[in-house]
Length: 405
Image 1: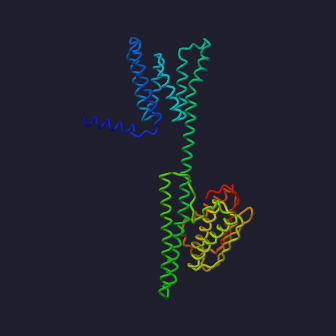
Image 2: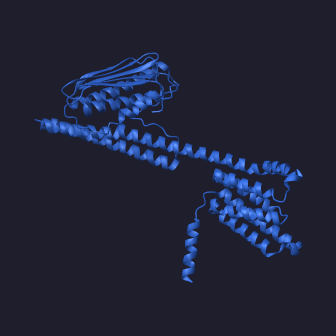
């Protein structure tokens, strides 16, 4: 008895307890109930022509196919289709016709080739018994083609809609992964790289002379570590929101760049100018703490930038300053310039590559921004000659530039 229960459990496990097609399952239940009711009614009224071993076997196979189709429709619906077709040809019943039409549509929905094969089987079976020379074959074929192609076309349309939704879901998930990777690189990776560089710089310079300077260094290191921790929590919260809600993916924001829709354009531009200048001042202070010296020039922003452009610009500037800290020579001069005109936003960065580059990072940050800018119709060029490194980027400053950083 225990072996029988084990075998039954394994069979149910193979069938699968989860049902990813509730509409198919509900339709199978209704068709099975209708088939039983119609067969019992006909057996009660005309038992001599209805109750036979062959007819009963076809009904049972059709019921098994419908019940199994609730769990594994791509397998069992074939049994319901074939048995229902044979039952329809053997007995004048309505339910088997509904079974084969429904099964054809579901098979087309699940797989294109399955729906085409099922439709071909129906067309071939319905031409049996029609004499080719009688002139009725063509008429019967056209009638059956118009009748049986309806479930095929319906199933194919539903299959295309499901595939489109599936592709859209995969694209959204891919965008979310790219946003998460870029956010982690632009925040956590750069924060940790700066922390490592500060520790290396402090080790190279030795212990400070006074206790106040020593405590100042510790405070700066703690601020860098706290920033990395804060960005880590932000990324974790973002991932949890994606899992729970799966919203439309939003780009990562290195710092607050929220739009002010109610503010006049002049005031909005002033706010964005102050945010960019604050970002540059913070990054310049970080570089100075590592021994860098350079020029940081920010042009006048005459009209406000779009939210996407602002996010892209702040993220790119953060990445460029982190790139200087990780790869440039602190003993040489660096320069960062940002300018605006009516058509484009221009960014220029130059520095000298360190002789012993620590290679902090994967080197993929600028490649991501290059792809975004070039996709929007801008330019992104890097020129390297010996140790000299130069970057020039031009981004179209339009509201419909297609930027999705």
